[in-house]
Image 1 (cartoon, rainbow, N blue to C red):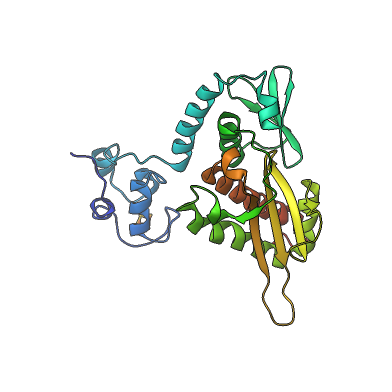
Image 2: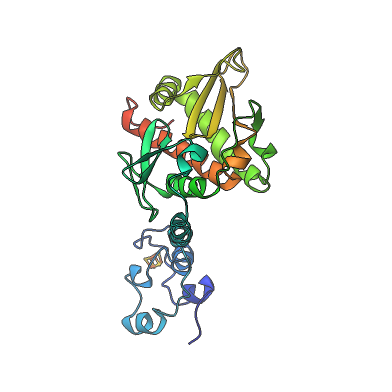
Length: 272
Ligand code: SF4
């Protein structure tokens, strides 16, 4: 039998009772999940053994996000081997400690060795790891341009802009509205500093997810019947020291980290 790529081919052999015992809302949703590699066919207890034998292993394997990230990380780690660690600290605004680069990310040092392996007191996930490794490889060391621009104006932002405003700025605004004290307390814990000079908003705070890639968070709380506003701006030099995908990943990672911390520390353990 040829490889199965179409969920309808699997749907035909399911019981079609939508009993949910497989953990998804319907037989069709289960068929889609199997084809996407999120569920095993054996997860439905009502498939005959002979059908299971016939169909299992025939489902075309889809690569998951984790698989894709693993491939990207492998290539990046290989590239780190050819970086000159002796001269890199100046370019990266980092330190060299015991033959490892110590790169400060939101007030915490992440230590990276020449094999691209990273250790830190914080949990290391791909939101951080991929941008940090790309930073080591591609940061040009360009000094701050002292000019704040929206994400869409960074060179190469292109398609990422569509996701950025919804998944990063809008998501962070909603969290700041629901838990203003907690959000700004966490930001200060991560080393946020007020924008020098005249603030652009009620809260104008600078954070450093990467030493040469500052983010400026501007927040206007709701007032007199007007809704709140939040934007994230970047120094124009960010495009020379990082790349739009990394900046998007760091911003998403920041929002996810806030979500997790809020659930853990808010009085009722709820986001909204
Ligand atoms: S357990 Fe099987 S029959 Fe029940 S909803 Fe899932 S796929 Fe359909």
